[in-house]
Length: 154
Image 1 (tube, rainbow, N blue to C red):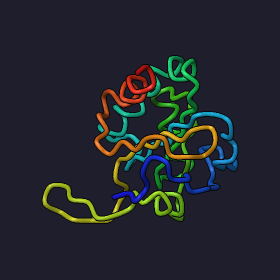
Image 2: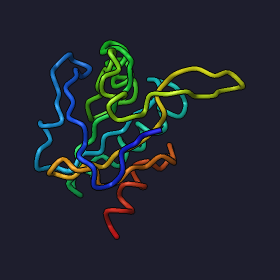
Image 3: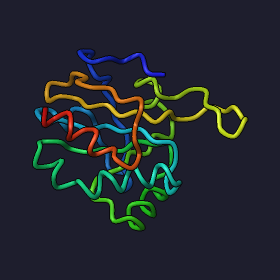
Image 4: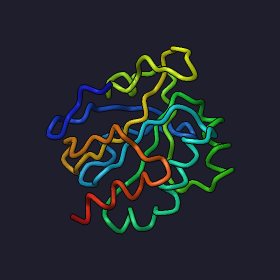
């Protein structure tokens, strides 16, 4: 799993979103960023997680957070996922796996007795100066936004 911990510098990245626009970590300088990595568009757990962020989007914005999802799905797949669930935040398409590898979330997984390489579900909260503030490896897909908000309230 990820080697990053609170206090580490978040790895710089540049990738493309669902509209093939370039997005970089530096675009979020001065803002808190929720950077969440998920395995695949339109699967049960990933949909629950995305909808959790969607349903609490305004509350997250009011708390000073920007939201950015990352998977290796194509921009076209992201467009369909966003349209189907009315997601108000961008999704990065990391086809070359550079972002998932730099954040240490690409690795061996097990599902139904089968082993394969893929994205491990991890959420990073990055502060406005680019430091990792929090790493959530035990993501509650149905309450992902509340995991972020509960910590910000305390």
